[in-house]
Length: 216
Image (cartoon, rainbow, N blue to C red; front, side, top):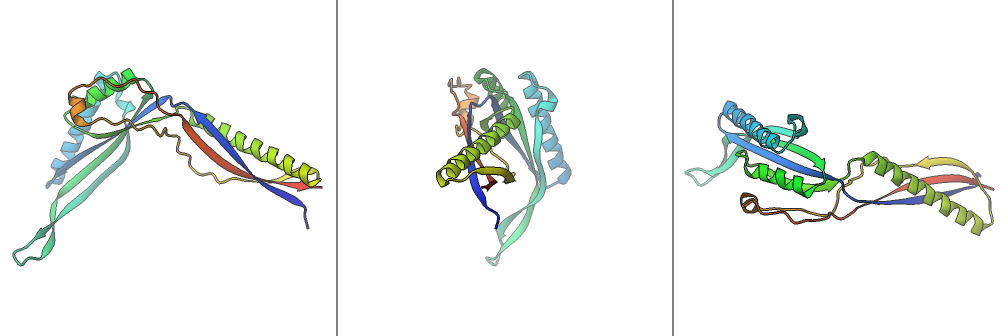
């Protein structure tokens, strides 16, 4: 039987957010498909125009999801029974805008949204620009942790750590998002309230990797 030691390493990384991410959703509804699409098109153009005033390019606003569907409503008929009645076509357009973390810039964007007739629903989050570097640092940390643990275990057991036989890693998607939530009601946007000078909490992520060595 092969003599091996299996060790799971834990990597941890904490980074400061340097990216603001605003998610926006535009919704248009009409009983006529053409009119619903025309309204949706007018909304996106209005939003783009507002963001151009804030210094962005047309290509900075990215579509993350576009959904057109039939909408039905439950209506009671004369006999008291409920039936699904066609209520129109619904167009949902989800978009994303990213820019360097800067509270003054964020205020400009929120003001642009407040002045936009499209009236999108929006959410604000904070992330990091160079996600690849964070993930690489995390993997290095996990491997170093596993190696250190393996050396300690081998020494305590009176054996010698041999050649590395296998590395097992689950390539899952990491969510590099700050836990800080920044929310503003529509009334505050309309009043152009000055933003607070906030500092989003660090993004703390961890990951594991399993390494297998020969022992002698």
